[in-house]
Image 1 (cartoon, rainbow, N blue to C red):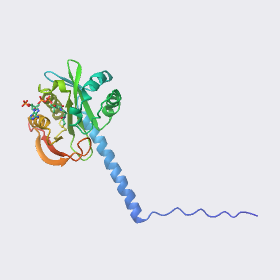
Image 2 (image 1 turned 90 degrees about the horizontal axis):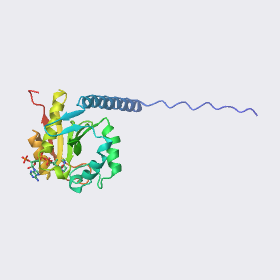
Image 3 (image 1 turned 60 degrees about the horizontal axis):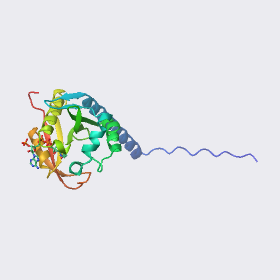
Image 4 (image 1 turned 180 degrees about the vertical axis):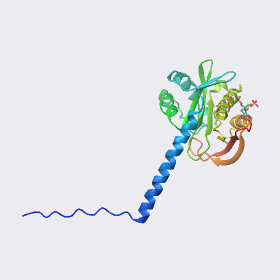
Amino acid sequence: MKKIKADPAPAPVPTQIERARGTDRAVAELAAATHRLSMRRVRDLLPGKIATKRLVLRAPIRGDVPDLVRLADNKAIANRLARLPNPYTRADAVGFIEIIAQRPDERPYAITLNDHLIGVIGLSFVPDRLPELGYWLGEPHWGQGFMTEAGRGLIDAAHQTGRYERIGARALADNDGSLHVLEKLGFHRVGKGKAEQGPNIGKPIVLLELERPRWM
Ligand SMILES: CC(C)(COP(=O)(O)OP(=O)(O)OC[C@H]1O[C@@H](n2cnc3c(N)ncnc32)[C@H](O)[C@@H]1OP(=O)(O)O)[C@@H](O)C(=O)NCCC(=O)NCCS
């Protein structure tokens, strides 16, 4: 007996609401892609190397792995940061150099003294936030003005691009050392919040901002 082919079911016609949702999604995706592109452009204006009086800031390299592991594997540092693994292993250091440092929304610099990494400083580019300064320094090097010097070097370089009108930062409310560094760099407190991730999730934080000086 001859089989009668059934007509294929007609494709469902999207309702007006579904069409509007599709358009909203496309607009949101386009806005996110445009934002990513403009962040990458702003990030790429930063110089590859920044020299200060005692330090050189440059991209982290594979040769930094031993110094990174030796200095970053420290609870006194990890407890102050949202994103530093603890314990900190060789795999973490390699992942930082090969993956995190290559991301379009990150611009980390190795802080080097006499060609050795002594810490890390950088800017992160999170959507809907100001470019955000973050840093840590190996404990043997604390208290010698290194972070203030590195921070000033990076901020001056950012301002010289003419594209960093405002830079943000956040620190745990009880991180007096870091708050002091930020205020020495000219940041001012603009609000309070709660840590969103890491070992101190939910603890009070201070939000800070720095505006580009008019003369730069
Ligand atoms: C915070 C940190 C970066 C400071 O680095 P550093 O090179 O020692 O900083 P500097 O020497 O440039 O400046 C520190 C300033 O804070 C002061 N300070 C340090 N600890 C302090 C404390 N507990 N309370 C108040 N002031 C403090 C110092 O006296 C110095 O000020 P001064 O130059 O007026 O004397 C370093 O301790 C660190 O890496 N800590 C762990 C990670 C961290 O907290 N990262 C920041 C997350 S927001």
